[in-house]
Image 1: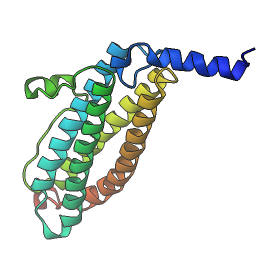
Image 2: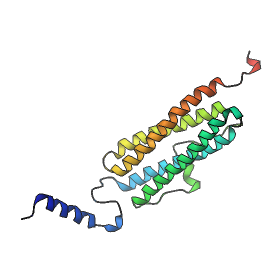
Image 3: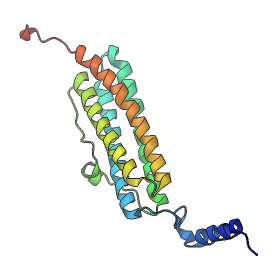
Image 4: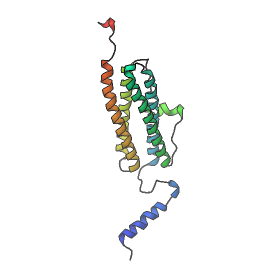
Length: 189
């Protein structure tokens, strides 16, 4: 007579053998995969645009006293590119194609790219904080939407969310410093 654990083990093995070409996606994944892939591609586009904006803004920060801000922005540009890669890998694991087409990145992105004149530290930091907060909100919504239907995707989104929340906290502090460091307009006094 077959025991219940033995029956369960055989049942799991049989389900795992079903559609081996699906890679890590098994029948226990309850997510609507095309919708998850679309969501991940929106996040990928947002991370790429955010990365490009951080990079552009880092190059605009020229004052020697603001070098730490520029270095921080360069580091976050790198991290966002890494996040985009992680999202692309997950899209591929789900059986879809990551969409990096530059013609469509800005349209899919939740983050709007905006540049500033040289030395506008307050504008740069405020725009980057806004973009980061948009990504925090988008990632929070994505985590809630995915829920338990796709635990691997949810954990990835949670890691990205934690990273973005850390960035928002740091940018918020930098925003306070940047607005107090604005040069005084001699005509306004």
